[in-house]
Amino acid sequence: MISYARHDEEFYGVFKLLNGEEVLGKAVLTEDEGNTLVFLQNPVCTQVITKESDDGRTVRGVGFAKWMQFSDEDFFIIQEKDILTVATMSKEVSFLYELYILGDDDEKKVSPEPEMGYLGKIDEARNLFERIYKS
Image (tube, rainbow, N blue to C red):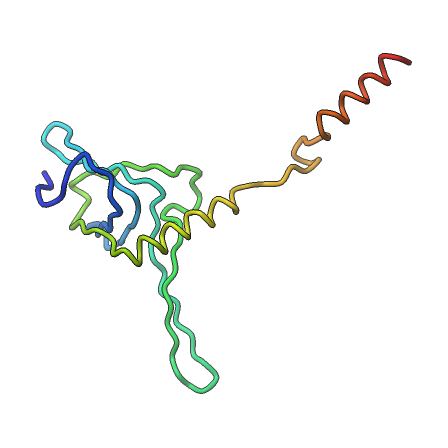
């Protein structure tokens, strides 16, 4: 059981997994039959970006990417046996994480298109049905 972290309290956590991945997210640790389970919401991993500037200097930046790129899920469970260590996010990183998650919501919103089955607004449909009924 992970005994060096509080259980049943939500926190911004950084999890180093045995496979080398570093996963960040809102987490709750809970005990299940003597083992710790981590309930992780909106997990992300970090991406280090390195670019060579025009004057020959190296510029580095860090960004976030969804942990599982092709999943629609935003909630995952990690078993204790897969975790090497747990730490809390610094306040600065948790702030950046929240900004990334809030920005990610905009990307998930899809404007309705006719190809997706969008036929119009309710008032337009009502007017059309009334004209069909009256004729």
